[in-house]
Length: 255
Image 1 (spheres, rainbow, N blue to C red):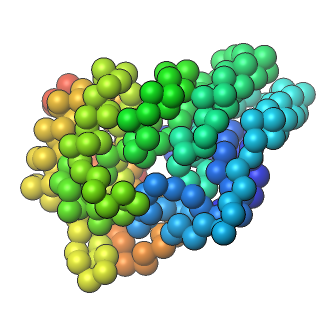
Image 2 (image 1 turned 120 degrees about the horizontal axis):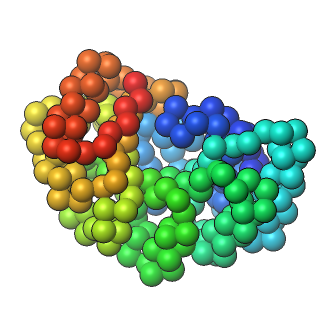
């Protein structure tokens, strides 16, 4: 499922409420530094010359949509960067964030700005600067074990390690939301399950070390490009959440 607009919705998000979606990736293909096996947009199949919206394109689309929603007395809870891939790959992401803050303040001052990111670009000073403009930095870590992370997320950078991601996340001094998709199933004949005791203990330890403002754990909810994946049951998800709470973490569970 690809998003064919720069601004779409608002939609009711399991985790965020009434969310206006912001897509700064191409509208005709997915472009991402991960190729996650559970991504609702499918696998990366970039066009030969993928076209990104310009800052002006983004400004015009968001201004028009927010003005329209205000005239209809519709008030989104959040403006969410998601869409067809990793938003922080946009070369003008800092300027796009500044535009978002400006238009949010003009039309929907109560709305939060959220960025869903896979954390891979946090080594860049400009991306960290841009993310500090957001109210919610929602940053991914799907496993604390390298082999599992690579099977689930399939990073374009084959050398990427969990320790690299953790080091980048630590730059936000706990002022971020950690998101993890819990799942199991076969990938290329290999069975993966990031809810086993071994997996969870490694992940709990990383969560303890990072001490994020909140932890979001969720299950697959839509069709996935790998059709051998299983949705984790609610009892398991609640047990994971209870363990996190016992470790003094704020948790949001989406089953």
